[in-house]
Image (cartoon, rainbow, N blue to C red; front, side, top):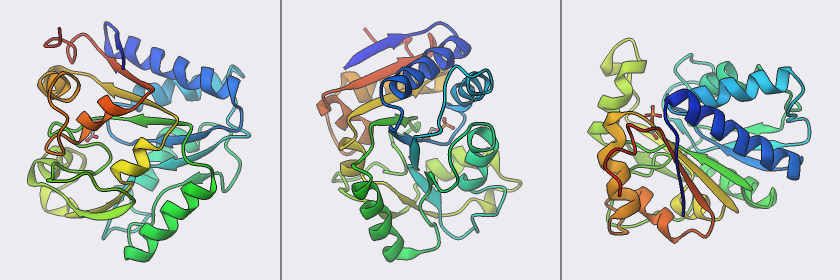
Length: 240
Ligand code: PGA
């Protein structure tokens, strides 16, 4: 595990974009695993800027997102489809059809077909992750086991509360989601996990310096052979 401590959120975002760009230069046909949330927004802005200036190209790459809500259409402005379109896909040069998110309304069949599609792509080369305040990665919530493949989940109340800031009304936050499994994530060749802000300091310490347990899903990353944990100073405040 490689721990990179940046100073500010902006510095963390630039370093993260550099890592993604290095991957794309080395492997133009990379399969990227992508995340939504506030954390990677700065990285996506840097990637969009660098694609615009010709420093990086997504023309031969493809992407698979971690997760999507159930119960809202992909066309909803609250969907992760919409988030990715707004923050990255509309601003960089992926080929049409090269970007993928799970179908939040496709049930078990969508789980199976999403997992199969990632497998057929040769699994993810570089997976970008954020971390939830409760240690979730994707929507793999604290549990008594590590889910293997793409599956449907009931969101924990703390996740619903954390995500309610992005909705007009807390009652509109979906209660269920579809997410890559921990096994899907662990099959990635390389993983970049980002965290910033005071609120993430405690979970960063537990996840990367505590016991490996499904109660803290991100702790499983301690067992992966190529993980970069990239933090701003605030999220790094409690680690040795
Ligand atoms: P955030 O979410 O980036 O909005 O903090 C992270 C997550 O829940 O995985």
